[in-house]
Image (tube, rainbow, N blue to C red; front, side, top):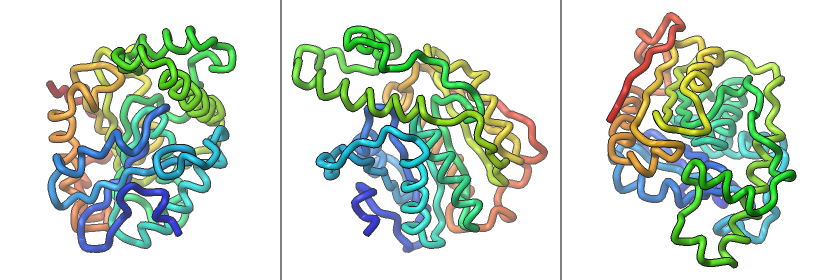
Length: 270
């Protein structure tokens, strides 16, 4: 029953399942190429959110808590005690964090949480409501951080469709609560950010330290908000290098305990 939530479902064949959550306006297609480019011991599991791809006839979600609750239940059921980790980009980072919180509470935590290009969950959403933006304003906002393929702007029908989806996803971000009593996760958190990201300052990424008992591991890449596209090769190399320590084991007690005590480390990658 949970298969429609994944472009590629979690497996129990010994591989590490990497559950991937998309950015606002994105889809599982953002991670499609990762299955070919990451090592064979990783099973890439992109999440398909309501209202896109094979679920395009479903209503898109606009309330973060509702979507996050349904998604967490789905992922916890799908992994069924198998080894898994999470990667979320931008909007997807908050969704991944919600899954990590729920999985930890249910006794099935991910091996680690990986987040890219997103403020720590206790920080206030800093952008104006999308309801106050005209279509032109929203397009300008997205173009500031290279969120639109310039070649597609000539296709008016695609632009209208894209803006509707982006508005719904931004509403998800707006309804995310920074005041929730987030428990501190007893698992490693790996954070990634682009040096020239116009939306996310590295200090906002460093603030993820509050959400883990481990020392936050933060990596900077050349590029902006979508460094996973523009710096894909070095990013995937770094991601695989970090995830290798979790392959083949679900026990955090056997995994890189030198990440403690809690103190952020920063690494630059070009």
